[in-house]
Amino acid sequence: MILRLAWPLWVTAVVLLPLLVICVLAAVRARRTEDGSFAAWLRRGGMVLALAVVALAPAVPSTTTTVATNVEMFFVVDRTGSMAAEDYDGDRPRLEGVRHDVTALVEAMPGARYSVITFDSQAARQLPLTTDARAVRTWADTLVQEITHYSAGSAIDRPLPALTAALEGAAERNPENVRIVYLLSDGENTRGDGTGETEPQSFAELAPLVDGGAVLGYGTPQGGQMRVYDGTEETGAGTDAPWILDETQPGSPPAVSRLDETQLRRVAEQLGVDYTHRTEPSPVDGLVAGIDAETIAADGRRDVSVYEDVYWPAAALLAALLAWEAWYQARRFPRPYATRTRTARPEGSGG
Image 1 (cartoon, one colour):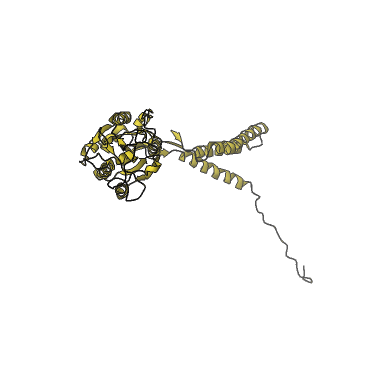
Image 2 (spheres, one colour):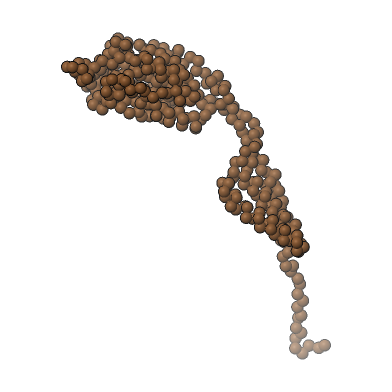
C-alpha cells in the first residue's frame, strides 16, 4: 500500500489534528456531564478521521501493465580539428565517415528517438531527443570541424558531463526506454598542449545507463594532416586552405593527427560496448545487431505497477456521517407553530 497524499502531509496534520483533539475533548466532557451530546461528538470525530483517510489517499497495487519500449540513440560526435585529418578511406577527412555512419545508423533504427552531442573546445547538445530522423540527417550533412582559431585541443572525456546529464535525464523521464550510445572520435587526447599526458576521466559510471551501442574510431595510426578552417566554404577539408601547423615542433611543420585506439578501447570497455575501427563507408548492420528493445527491456523495466485507490470506503462513511449530522442539526431547529388571530368585529355589531 502507498499513500498518494491528496494534500501535503503537513497540511493534513495542521488542519485535521486540532479538529480531532476538539472532538475527543468534547466527547470526554459530554460523557462526564451526561448532557446528551456524547454520541454527536463521537460522530464528528469519525468525520474527521474519515476525512483524514481521504486526504492520505491510500492505494494498493492493482495490475501490472506492459508499456511500449522506445529506443533512445545518443550520438556523441568529435568535431575537433583532428577529425578533419585526411586519412579516412584513402585521403578523405574523418568527418566524412562520421556523416555516413550517423546517417546509416539512423536509417538502421527507424522509429527510435535520437539525440546529438558534439564536442570540440566544449561540449554541447545539438539535438535533444527527437523522433525526427530528417533533423538528424540534416545535421549530419552540415557537420563541419571546429574553427581552427578556437581550438583547445582534443579531449576524449570532454563530452562526459553533457552525456551524463542527457542519460540521467532520459532515465528519469522514461526509465523503461532502452538507451544506446554511439561515440564517434579519433581518440586523441591533447587538450591543446600537445602532450596527451592528461589522464581522461572515466565513463564507467555511465555503464548502468547504457544498454548498447559502440565506440567508433576514425583515422589511421600513421595519421593525417588537417586543413585550416575559418568558418567559410573556402577553408577546411577538401579545399586548398593551408595545413594546420604543429607549433610545438621546430620549424612548425604540418600537424599530424593519429588514431588513438587505446583511448577508444578504454572508453568502450568503461561503457560496456564494443569498439569498431571505421576505415571506409560500409554497412552498419553489425553495429545495431543484437539491439532488440523487447529483449533488452526484459530486465523488468517495462513492468509498471498500476495502483487502485482504496479510500472510497472512508469517503462513503464520511458522506453517511455528514447526512447523520445534517439530520441531527435539523431536529434542533425551532419548530414553526400556528398563532391564533382574532378577527375584530365591526363596531355596532350585535352579540
